[in-house]
Image (tube, rainbow, N blue to C red; front, side, top):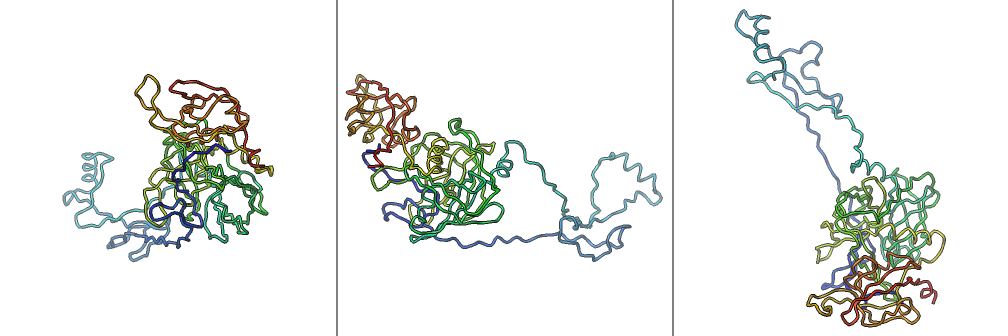
Length: 445
């Protein structure tokens, strides 16, 4: 039995554009509808101020009535030159005295009744500053792909992270699941080219998938970072294709770490739960599968889901609560899928429920954690002496506040890792050292 919450809880909306909405009027859909969004025309109007007419052209200037060109270099605003007369016989000496009185750098004022115009000036491109969003975008955009999926259940789009020069791409399972029944996947790249792709492997429990673009070479693989090094408050950048708008860049900060997020369950009742990176960088439907990077352009998470305030129909948008799967938890799964293996996950071998109001002996302060409801025979939990009724409050130094919190924390480890579990039994605190099991045997059966 896989570790799973004893009672289901509402799922987080995913940030992809899935094929089918689900839910009832009382229960908002957990996935956004895959309706295609019509292309919006973004019209701009160029405004150029016409130069004021001059009685006679100054030497070397264009004659009156000449039409300025529309290009930035060709256009020049009209300039009217006015002579300053200081007395009837002032001449050169009078002008010199005026300059001395105001100073060499004094601004000139137009003669009353003359007309001035805005000027268009060159704004040469500046190199991106180190650690800027601009620098991150220029580095990461070539490593991000737009993924269009069509299948019997509908069509939609998402994003992907290029892992190899020959087209191996990481994305979310919910982005490509519609193509699982004979559907098609098309991948579009930063240089404007596109290619068909096939699914290499999927892992619903971590909401990850690996696809292979066909007949491509020379792509730019993303640089993979370390999500364990993240700190709350540090800057991050999200890149993807929200609502089909490819190569969209947004920025923000890490709002929280190890946020337990549940986005669904498989046919066996096992939850798709992960210890998410929470960010306020704008993430919307279509961003799913795209990278969340640090300010050096290193991928530290996969944008996967959002919390919205929407309770009605239609696709919801960002309210500053986006969630990404930490890359550290994903890469071992990617390696297994790349090798043609079935992904495996760590497990304790227990079923749990959330507890919020138990009080520790000798204290009136309520505690929270994950209460063990059932212990699987032969599991590492049984071998360590854990039993039904125990309330798990910590795994190593990570606090456990609910059933989802425990599942997400255990999923961040790999089978065979050794952990210390802190638990309460009859109000007394105790610890157990154990080696995490693998769900490989359960999957095989």
